[in-house]
Length: 166
Image 1 (cartoon, rainbow, N blue to C red):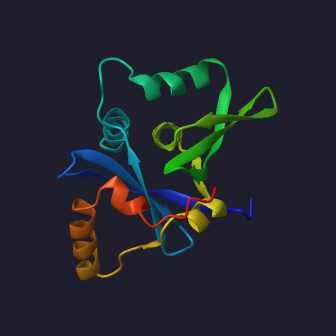
Image 2: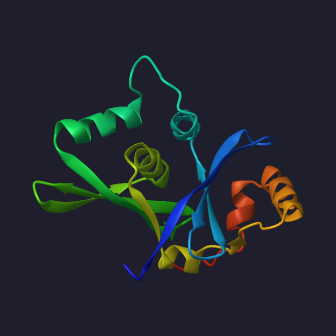
C-alpha cells in the first residue's frame, strides 16, 4: 500500500480540438495530476454519474454495479497500476465471500465504477515514476493557463518524452 498514492477524480474534460475525453486524477496528498485519455462512452458515463443524471435504463457501468449488488460483491478499491506503451492499466480489488479478488480493468472503466460505488482510488508510484510530472494548478491564473494548455493538448504530446522502458 505504500507503493500506492490515494487519488480522486479531479476533472473530466473534453478537448475541443480532438473532441476527446481526458480524466485528471489528483494525488490527494501530493501536488500532481495524472491525465488519462479515455473513450467517449466512458467519459460520458463518468459525466452522467457526476451530474446525477437519471437514465431510464442502466448503462454498462450501472449494470456492473447492479451485478456487484446482486452477487454480494464489494469494490474495495481501484488502482491505476502501470503505464506501458502509452497505455494505462488498472485493477479492481473486489471482496466476495470473504475473499479478495483482483480484476484487470481499463482505468476509465475502473473510475466509472468507483465513482458509482464510492470506492477509493489509488495510483501506483510506478505510474508516477513513468509519466511526466503534471503539477496541480494553484492560483486562478495557473488554473486558466492549465486549461489553455489542456485544450491544446493531444495524446502524442503527453507521451512524446516518455522513455520506452517498461
